[in-house]
Image (cartoon, rainbow, N blue to C red; front, side):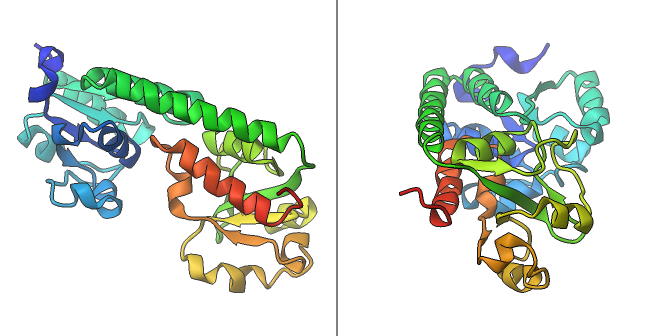
Length: 262
Protein backbone atom coordinates (compact mmCIF):
# COMPACT_ATOMS: atom_id res chain seq x y z
CA UNK A 1 0.00 0.00 0.00
CA UNK A 2 1.24 3.52 -0.80
CA UNK A 3 2.44 5.71 2.04
CA UNK A 4 -0.12 8.45 1.32
CA UNK A 5 -2.12 7.49 4.41
CA UNK A 6 0.73 8.40 6.76
CA UNK A 7 0.15 11.38 9.07
CA UNK A 8 2.03 14.58 8.35
CA UNK A 9 4.08 14.14 11.54
CA UNK A 10 5.40 10.74 10.48
CA UNK A 11 6.14 11.55 6.84
CA UNK A 12 9.56 10.74 5.41
CA UNK A 13 10.12 12.76 2.25
CA UNK A 14 12.93 12.51 -0.28
CA UNK A 15 13.16 15.61 -2.48
CA UNK A 16 14.89 15.36 -5.84
CA UNK A 17 14.69 19.03 -6.79
CA UNK A 18 15.88 22.22 -5.04
CA UNK A 19 12.65 24.05 -5.78
CA UNK A 20 10.66 21.35 -3.98
CA UNK A 21 13.19 21.24 -1.15
CA UNK A 22 12.85 24.98 -0.65
CA UNK A 23 9.07 24.75 -0.82
CA UNK A 24 9.01 22.27 2.06
CA UNK A 25 11.31 24.53 4.06
CA UNK A 26 9.23 27.62 3.26
CA UNK A 27 6.10 25.84 4.47
CA UNK A 28 7.81 24.88 7.74
CA UNK A 29 7.79 21.23 6.74
CA UNK A 30 11.53 20.73 6.64
CA UNK A 31 11.29 18.14 9.42
CA UNK A 32 9.67 15.75 6.93
CA UNK A 33 12.80 15.67 4.77
CA UNK A 34 15.01 12.60 5.15
CA UNK A 35 17.01 12.92 1.92
CA UNK A 36 17.73 15.40 -0.86
CA UNK A 37 19.51 15.72 -4.19
CA UNK A 38 23.08 17.01 -4.35
CA UNK A 39 22.11 20.43 -5.70
CA UNK A 40 19.61 21.03 -2.89
CA UNK A 41 22.34 20.26 -0.36
CA UNK A 42 24.77 22.55 -2.13
CA UNK A 43 22.55 25.65 -2.20
CA UNK A 44 20.49 25.19 0.96
CA UNK A 45 22.43 25.15 4.27
CA UNK A 46 19.42 23.86 6.21
CA UNK A 47 19.55 20.47 4.47
CA UNK A 48 23.30 20.19 4.06
CA UNK A 49 23.60 17.45 6.70
CA UNK A 50 20.82 15.29 5.30
CA UNK A 51 21.61 12.13 3.32
CA UNK A 52 22.18 12.85 -0.36
CA UNK A 53 20.71 10.60 -2.99
CA UNK A 54 22.57 11.75 -6.11
CA UNK A 55 22.24 14.46 -8.72
CA UNK A 56 19.17 16.05 -10.21
CA UNK A 57 19.23 13.77 -13.23
CA UNK A 58 21.07 10.73 -11.87
CA UNK A 59 19.69 10.00 -8.40
CA UNK A 60 20.48 6.65 -6.83
CA UNK A 61 17.51 4.30 -6.57
CA UNK A 62 19.32 2.29 -3.90
CA UNK A 63 19.97 5.38 -1.78
CA UNK A 64 16.35 6.51 -2.06
CA UNK A 65 14.92 3.11 -1.15
CA UNK A 66 17.33 2.86 1.79
CA UNK A 67 15.70 5.93 3.36
CA UNK A 68 12.26 4.24 3.45
CA UNK A 69 10.44 7.32 2.12
CA UNK A 70 6.72 7.93 2.51
CA UNK A 71 6.96 9.57 -0.88
CA UNK A 72 9.50 10.99 -3.31
CA UNK A 73 8.96 14.51 -4.66
CA UNK A 74 10.41 15.27 -8.08
CA UNK A 75 9.99 17.42 -11.15
CA UNK A 76 9.07 15.18 -14.09
CA UNK A 77 11.67 14.98 -16.85
CA UNK A 78 12.80 12.56 -19.51
CA UNK A 79 15.88 11.76 -17.43
CA UNK A 80 13.80 10.72 -14.41
CA UNK A 81 11.08 8.77 -16.19
CA UNK A 82 12.78 5.42 -15.57
CA UNK A 83 13.32 6.28 -11.89
CA UNK A 84 9.66 7.24 -11.56
CA UNK A 85 8.57 3.89 -12.96
CA UNK A 86 10.99 1.89 -10.80
CA UNK A 87 9.88 3.65 -7.62
CA UNK A 88 6.25 2.99 -8.38
CA UNK A 89 7.08 -0.65 -9.13
CA UNK A 90 8.52 -0.81 -5.59
CA UNK A 91 5.25 0.62 -4.22
CA UNK A 92 6.88 3.93 -3.30
CA UNK A 93 4.68 6.95 -3.87
CA UNK A 94 5.98 9.54 -6.34
CA UNK A 95 4.71 13.11 -6.24
CA UNK A 96 5.65 14.52 -9.66
CA UNK A 97 5.25 18.30 -9.79
CA UNK A 98 6.00 20.26 -12.95
CA UNK A 99 7.52 23.74 -12.57
CA UNK A 100 7.82 25.04 -16.12
CA UNK A 101 5.22 27.82 -16.04
CA UNK A 102 4.30 30.19 -13.25
CA UNK A 103 0.95 28.44 -12.74
CA UNK A 104 2.72 25.07 -12.50
CA UNK A 105 5.05 26.45 -9.83
CA UNK A 106 2.08 27.75 -7.84
CA UNK A 107 0.32 24.40 -8.23
CA UNK A 108 3.41 22.56 -6.97
CA UNK A 109 3.43 24.74 -3.84
CA UNK A 110 -0.25 23.99 -3.25
CA UNK A 111 0.03 20.25 -3.92
CA UNK A 112 3.12 19.79 -1.77
CA UNK A 113 1.55 21.82 1.03
CA UNK A 114 -1.57 19.66 0.99
CA UNK A 115 0.49 16.47 0.96
CA UNK A 116 2.49 17.40 4.09
CA UNK A 117 -0.35 18.94 6.08
CA UNK A 118 0.62 22.56 5.40
CA UNK A 119 -2.21 23.51 3.05
CA UNK A 120 -2.99 26.88 4.64
CA UNK A 121 0.67 27.92 4.68
CA UNK A 122 0.86 26.99 0.99
CA UNK A 123 -2.24 29.02 0.16
CA UNK A 124 -0.84 32.01 2.05
CA UNK A 125 2.45 31.80 0.15
CA UNK A 126 0.57 31.62 -3.17
CA UNK A 127 -1.52 34.67 -2.25
CA UNK A 128 1.63 36.66 -1.53
CA UNK A 129 3.15 35.66 -4.87
CA UNK A 130 -0.01 36.57 -6.79
CA UNK A 131 -0.27 39.90 -4.98
CA UNK A 132 3.33 40.80 -5.79
CA UNK A 133 2.80 39.83 -9.42
CA UNK A 134 -0.32 41.97 -9.77
CA UNK A 135 1.41 45.00 -8.25
CA UNK A 136 4.48 44.59 -10.47
CA UNK A 137 2.38 44.27 -13.63
CA UNK A 138 0.53 47.48 -12.76
CA UNK A 139 3.84 49.32 -12.37
CA UNK A 140 5.14 47.85 -15.62
CA UNK A 141 2.25 49.21 -17.64
CA UNK A 142 3.24 52.78 -16.75
CA UNK A 143 6.67 52.67 -18.44
CA UNK A 144 7.87 51.74 -21.96
CA UNK A 145 9.44 48.29 -22.02
CA UNK A 146 13.15 47.80 -22.66
CA UNK A 147 14.16 45.06 -25.14
CA UNK A 148 15.87 42.48 -22.94
CA UNK A 149 17.83 39.25 -23.25
CA UNK A 150 18.01 37.07 -20.14
CA UNK A 151 21.17 34.96 -20.38
CA UNK A 152 21.38 31.60 -18.59
CA UNK A 153 24.66 30.43 -20.16
CA UNK A 154 27.18 32.43 -22.18
CA UNK A 155 29.09 29.90 -24.26
CA UNK A 156 27.20 28.32 -25.87
CA UNK A 157 24.57 31.02 -25.49
CA UNK A 158 21.33 29.95 -23.82
CA UNK A 159 18.61 32.48 -23.04
CA UNK A 160 15.11 32.65 -21.63
CA UNK A 161 12.58 32.05 -24.42
CA UNK A 162 8.80 32.10 -24.25
CA UNK A 163 6.34 30.27 -22.04
CA UNK A 164 8.33 29.71 -18.85
CA UNK A 165 7.91 31.28 -15.42
CA UNK A 166 11.05 33.33 -16.16
CA UNK A 167 9.46 34.72 -19.31
CA UNK A 168 6.37 35.64 -17.28
CA UNK A 169 8.61 37.22 -14.66
CA UNK A 170 10.37 39.32 -17.29
CA UNK A 171 7.03 40.62 -18.53
CA UNK A 172 5.81 41.40 -15.01
CA UNK A 173 9.04 43.24 -14.23
CA UNK A 174 8.55 45.61 -17.15
CA UNK A 175 11.01 44.09 -19.60
CA UNK A 176 10.33 43.02 -23.19
CA UNK A 177 11.76 39.54 -23.73
CA UNK A 178 13.55 39.69 -27.09
CA UNK A 179 13.57 35.86 -27.27
CA UNK A 180 9.90 35.32 -26.44
CA UNK A 181 9.04 34.12 -29.96
CA UNK A 182 11.29 31.06 -29.70
CA UNK A 183 9.37 27.81 -29.44
CA UNK A 184 11.63 26.59 -26.64
CA UNK A 185 11.57 27.94 -23.11
CA UNK A 186 15.36 28.05 -22.88
CA UNK A 187 16.72 28.08 -26.42
CA UNK A 188 20.31 28.01 -27.56
CA UNK A 189 20.79 31.04 -29.78
CA UNK A 190 23.54 32.26 -32.09
CA UNK A 191 25.66 35.35 -31.75
CA UNK A 192 24.17 36.49 -35.04
CA UNK A 193 20.69 36.35 -33.53
CA UNK A 194 21.86 38.31 -30.50
CA UNK A 195 23.40 41.05 -32.63
CA UNK A 196 20.24 41.29 -34.74
CA UNK A 197 18.09 41.40 -31.60
CA UNK A 198 20.13 44.40 -30.38
CA UNK A 199 19.08 44.10 -26.74
CA UNK A 200 18.89 47.30 -24.74
CA UNK A 201 19.33 45.34 -21.51
CA UNK A 202 21.20 42.10 -20.82
CA UNK A 203 20.35 40.23 -17.63
CA UNK A 204 23.14 37.73 -17.01
CA UNK A 205 22.58 34.80 -14.64
CA UNK A 206 25.43 32.70 -16.05
CA UNK A 207 28.45 31.35 -14.19
CA UNK A 208 30.85 32.68 -13.18
CA UNK A 209 29.05 35.95 -12.38
CA UNK A 210 32.22 38.01 -11.94
CA UNK A 211 33.18 37.44 -15.60
CA UNK A 212 30.01 38.94 -17.07
CA UNK A 213 31.33 42.46 -17.65
CA UNK A 214 34.54 41.25 -19.32
CA UNK A 215 32.66 38.74 -21.48
CA UNK A 216 30.10 41.20 -22.83
CA UNK A 217 32.63 43.97 -23.40
CA UNK A 218 33.68 42.11 -26.56
CA UNK A 219 30.40 43.12 -28.23
CA UNK A 220 30.36 46.87 -27.78
CA UNK A 221 27.98 47.26 -30.72
CA UNK A 222 25.15 45.86 -28.60
CA UNK A 223 23.12 48.73 -27.13
CA UNK A 224 23.06 47.03 -23.73
CA UNK A 225 26.86 46.96 -23.69
CA UNK A 226 27.54 50.40 -25.15
CA UNK A 227 25.05 51.99 -22.75
CA UNK A 228 26.28 50.10 -19.69
CA UNK A 229 23.11 48.07 -19.23
CA UNK A 230 24.50 44.62 -18.44
CA UNK A 231 23.19 43.46 -15.09
CA UNK A 232 24.37 40.37 -13.17
CA UNK A 233 21.39 38.46 -11.78
CA UNK A 234 21.65 36.21 -8.76
CA UNK A 235 21.06 32.49 -9.35
CA UNK A 236 18.25 32.51 -6.79
CA UNK A 237 16.14 34.46 -9.29
CA UNK A 238 16.20 31.49 -11.67
CA UNK A 239 14.95 28.97 -9.11
CA UNK A 240 11.24 28.12 -9.60
CA UNK A 241 10.49 27.71 -5.91
CA UNK A 242 8.28 29.23 -3.23
CA UNK A 243 9.76 32.74 -3.45
CA UNK A 244 8.75 33.89 -6.90
CA UNK A 245 7.68 37.17 -5.34
CA UNK A 246 11.19 37.83 -4.03
CA UNK A 247 12.71 36.79 -7.36
CA UNK A 248 10.35 39.15 -9.18
CA UNK A 249 11.32 41.97 -6.83
CA UNK A 250 15.01 41.43 -7.62
CA UNK A 251 14.37 41.29 -11.36
CA UNK A 252 12.23 44.42 -11.19
CA UNK A 253 15.03 46.22 -9.37
CA UNK A 254 17.41 45.45 -12.24
CA UNK A 255 14.93 46.81 -14.77
CA UNK A 256 14.26 49.90 -12.66
CA UNK A 257 17.99 50.59 -12.34
CA UNK A 258 18.39 51.10 -16.09
CA UNK A 259 15.06 52.76 -16.94
CA UNK A 260 13.42 56.02 -15.98
CA UNK A 261 10.91 54.22 -13.80
CA UNK A 262 11.13 55.42 -10.16
